Length: 395
Image 1 (cartoon, rainbow, N blue to C red):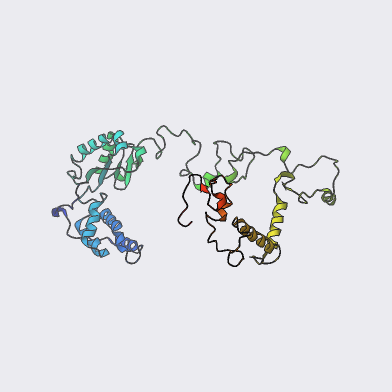
Image 2 (cartoon, helix red, strand yellow):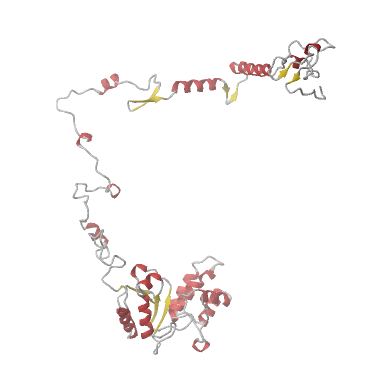
């Protein structure tokens, strides 16, 4: 982006002050911000100053800085950064901003710039001889569907040709800009297709008729609720397909002369599907098994084994625990635990000091697949392994 500087001192005014009406607006705008954040109003105040004088002067920057208690350099940074702020004098009657972005360029913005050069000045940001007109090229102005277009102050003029823009420039130069039609300059409503609507073309614009008239006016597009006998249908139900049929109409009465059944007799003869069921049932239709009986039995068993949410220490649970512990002890017994006696006391030796690969335990494993009997097995010698490994030092 090119460097933006303030205009020369020769064109700068000596001072600046907001008008009485704008001063009230400034006070109300500053009050919108919380205490200590009033400096956030710098952009609105600069825009108001530009609308009052047509461009942002050095005196206006100083005034805004003083009003918001900001260093002047901070306000100057904002004014020179945003290209929406004009830092030099512009036309007093019209400053024309020509969009030159790709959509407008493809639709003929070069012709618009050529007209500006011929009728205003060869270069942008320069005034015409009378000082009433100026122009510049800008980026996208947000009406690409109506390209090419220009903006004059706050109004847009769209769907332009070079000839039509020349007429608009002449009107503003004569001081008749207020009479120029704004928006699309062709027979087109806002941004609808240039050839007219191809869908939803039977609805009237509510801008032409008031809200009450628009609601009361009949809608001829599609099938209305009134024409189909659905008057009073809620909007949320208007698009639903009508699936009603005479066979399913709940208001249809039974055939004439059919015997009437008393409600008490119907209840007596009805079958309660919930009694003793082993499978679920809903609306008289049987479903797959739900194992309700087994689930209830498991709940009762759990309730019997707990007291207040804690496991009981008596009853069947205690017997189960003792049996489980005994099974664990039996499973971890050594092969030679039964009948093993201590040589000193004659009682059972639980130390396990001599029960290694050279003791009785390994001797009893001579018939297993991973042991090869040695020549001295019966003489108290240990059985050698399949690979003839030597006994460990601990043995």
